[in-house]
Image: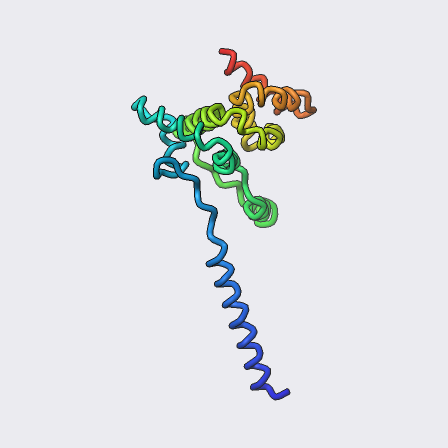
Length: 192
């Protein structure tokens, strides 16, 4: 086969691959968020802590009304701090291979208050979803053992009431000492 013909085949194959990738990117749009009264769940999630009672009540009714449809959004909010495999690999490479120190993350009172506010919104939203949150109870139970979102997951299970407590108690029987400490802390917070 002549060299020019081989180059043409390579160009055609490369062009077809590019077209395929572009079509896959266009067709794989991200899932659209559910809406309530024309606003997305992101808006209502933030308004769960609104200063105005009317707005806060409207946000609560949004989560209560949408019920099961809120679960993917809420689980994404809950697990947003868990690093991806790529991020973990990058951190390992940086620390072990390049021997560079771990970058210092944002910390302090600002971050702590932001995390506490998110935790409060999450627990309130799961409490509003209530019994309709049954499909994610097992996943929440497994997240109680996660080093990234254990306190939030335990708080959400406790907020779900009689639906979440059995899973929370099952997680408390695990061998993971940190999980048991987290659960004890969450139980103390809910009893106070």
